[in-house]
Length: 152
Image (cartoon, rainbow, N blue to C red):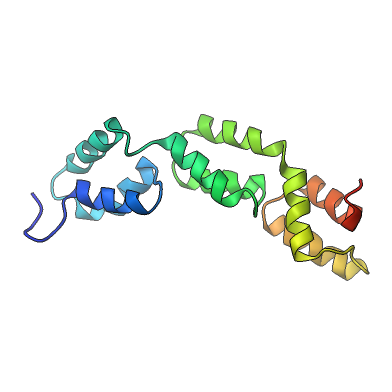
């Protein structure tokens, strides 16, 4: 039982979920310190999951929606894995993103640079920028080599 004035585990979880989507594993990590008796947190999360408040597919879609325009598939895969999501769901999400990776990388490159590299140092800088955003090496090479015209 929560102390007077202190929200219950379910209340804390709902407060977190009202701000953004969380996976069950994330909620377990965040709320573990508030658990007063073993199994209390699991029961609260089971109830929220049964009512549809915790939905791992929504977490995947939320991350993709928020991040796909700015980062590459590798970075999104890492974020999804860090959320403790089902590996199969992560693989499915990543497979869908790979088809659009080149176009997304071109758009990120265009917003940041907009013109082809003038020399080898600038080329390296542009390539490192895209790689740090999680875009694959082949995609990075194609985007920076193509330059502003978008041709390969």
